[in-house]
Length: 334
Image (cartoon, rainbow, N blue to C red):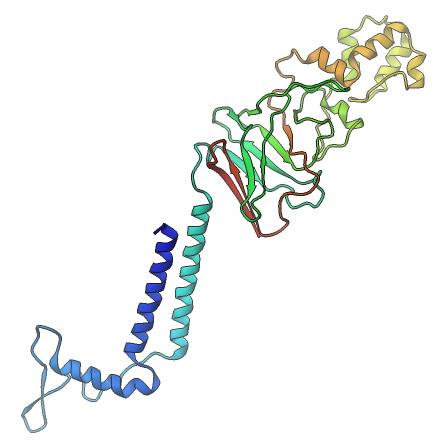
C-alpha cells in the first residue's frame, strides 16, 4: 500500500473509531442505558480493583459509585459532535492535499531548488502570448535545459524544450542550433507559439534592430550600439562631411537604415558604406559578436512552435521535468 492509501485508511479508521465512541457514549434516548452501564461499571470498578462501597444512612455499606450519589450523566449535543466531525474532515482534507502535492513532485530532480518556474502569461488563448518564465538561481552551476519537458498534470499535454541559437543571423540564413545552457541568474521565456524568426534564440547587444522588423512577446530589449558613437569610433568619414554627421546624429538606436531611405541615397559614398557596415542587425552582429559581453547573461526566447494554447486558464498544474523525467519545479493555480 502506498503512502496515499495508508493515510486514507488511517483517516477512515479514525472516523470509525470516532463514531464508535459516539455510539458508546450515548445520545438522547440512550442516556438511561448509558447511566445504567456506567453505574454497573462503577460498582465493580476497573479490572484488577475491588468494588467501591459507600456508607449508607443506617451506617451500613452498599455497593455503588463512590464519587457521587445519583450524579447526572454528561452527554454531548448533536451540534458538538457535528463540529468535531467537521474538524476531523478538515484535518483529513488538509492531509490529503499534502499527500497529493508530495506525489506530484516525485521523483525529485537533482535540479530541484536550483531554478524558478513562474506562471507569467500561461492560459492566454493566443499561443504567441502564452508563456512561462524559467530563471536559474544565483550561486549554482550553469544548467543545460534542452531535452527538459513541461507537462500539464491535468490534461497530460507535454512539450519538450528545444535547442536554440546563441547568435541569431537574420535574412534567410540557416542558423545552427545547440543545447541551451542557462547561466546563474539567467532567464528564459518558454513561449507556446511560433518564433517570429523561425528559431529559439538568445538576445544580444544588437537585438533591438529586430524590433522594427518582427513582433515579439514579451518584447526584446532595445539594445544597440549608439550610431553616433559608432561613427566616431569606426568610420573614416571626413569631419567636413556635415550631411553624414547630421544624418547619423538624427538616427535613434536600433533604427535600420538602407537604400529605401530617400535621404540615404544623397549621402556620400563613404557615409553610405559606414551605414551599411554598422547600422542594421546583421552588420551589427558581424561587427560586435566577438565581444565577450555580446550576449552575456541576456534572456533566451524559447518557442514550442504550437498553433494553439497549451496551458489551462484555470485549475492547472504544470510540472517542469528534467531529461530523466524527474520533477524540477511545479506551478499550481486554480
